[in-house]
Length: 257
Ligand SMILES: [Cu+2]
Image 1: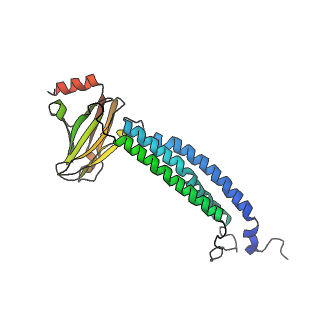
Image 2: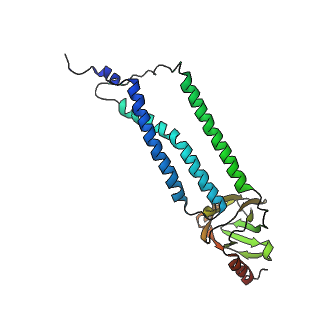
Image 3: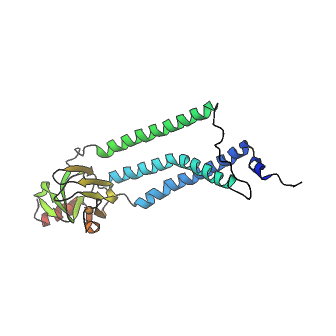
């Protein structure tokens, strides 16, 4: 004689259509939030870009975050709605059995296959294009070659084109392509200039290369990104991006050509 429905029927209060509408609305809302987050936060966290490479990295990060926002939003919408709608309440318990399998919804599996394939293709094509744009040989306008040597726990930079001037801080002229030839005297290190979006392993007995074009004057960080012993955390120095006149003056002051 109870006025309320038996507990086991509570889950049926809403039709599947209504569930779908609420989930769809949550999906749309979370997608909008995700896109706003993707447009603002990665760029903000990564700070100002100091090279063409970093500009491309930030653009790629933002594009991939926007593309993944609807996927993440769908997961959040389904998860949160399920937690709220089908949670344990009072005497009612969700059954242990799986729900009925989805069959005969050819359009929904087809749509999902299409969406997944389109997203994968987009990421692949964008990624390859971005990779080739940051990896293209910096041969266009006489790149500056910098020999980078890591050792526990300092960096040494040598400039073969400037009479082998050596420094423990990195000096670069603005808007000139730079090719780094990177090696190590002892263990594996990793040469990393976060604001320029470049990072490559420094291996003993071999040379790795990486290139970029600094496009912003200022002082930036050089760090080691590979655990290399006790003072790994202190293995950092400065990178200065100078005008070409300032760079020439610095090189001359060090006895370089
Ligand atoms: Cu290290």
